[in-house]
Image (cartoon, rainbow, N blue to C red):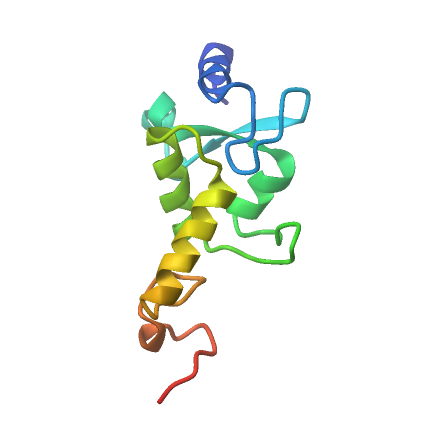
Length: 126
């Protein structure tokens, strides 16, 4: 359980908004551990981010997003880490940027690895 002081610091840093979709104050916000919790040493502000309930389940790869898309925990973790260091962008916008970049680089849009190396997705193989 996070101390209230730390929870409030994280939410204030994130302007009381979901950093994934940008949902504003008044929406149910959770504080999410970016690197998965394995003790108190992970309860530090740079490892925490504000997410609405729907997107919290999404970044845990439990539920699809509003468009029916799914994300891997590894990709979500990469994006959320980026968000804590870069303001002015939502997670969904960063994910779109990455997917466009991966398409240009012939990488798997779901995993970010070379398409021919991805064993989970059904990529066209030559």
